[in-house]
Length: 284
Image (cartoon, rainbow, N blue to C red; front, side):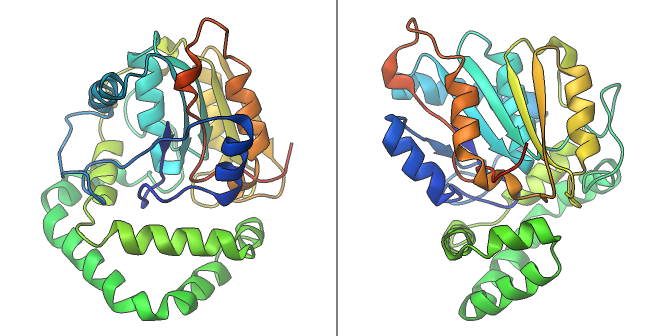
């Protein structure tokens, strides 16, 4: 299962991940969160509640066991599923995922630092904010290339290298434009949830967790990865040298190896679901 970033939708899958999935006989299922693309807007009480929907989805698809890869804002939801569905989640890979911002598991710094303060406001203003974002994207659609150039110019060098790949640029452009055609509330619903208690403790996660973080990430700092690694018992932190927030998009092979390494012959082969959307780059 691939959980897209914030913002993002179901087409946020790195081309290298699609190719690797085909080569390995792996099936990638990208799940749009409520309020983006074709997913109905819904307000969860906590991040933890998302796992209930994932269990229903897996049941509907006839999937008993699966792996998860998640980029940035998809990270909290992946950890929630790992906590709530240990009998079904084989392993998870978190690519620059945010850490909790409140409670005993709270980390400092990063883009979610203001979430506890802004969360309630964003939650109540999600409809006008979503409409504004959707309208802005529609207006800027003819200038998509120039907007990406501008965005890339203010990103750290590591992320600029990622955006130098035309296929990656086109993937992000296609994902945001198509994902916002009907609605654009998901990123605000994410922000509201990240500023609340997640509904579980990191120390209680028993599923293997692989953490991929760039040491030059200015959006979700490496400290968040170190924080998660200290608190999640069965976790491994892989620091990506000189990479930013999107560096994980180039580490497809590492992510597949990490998750598939936990697969056993007892797991049904029809459930091979793995990373995508934002898969890492080179590093160590």
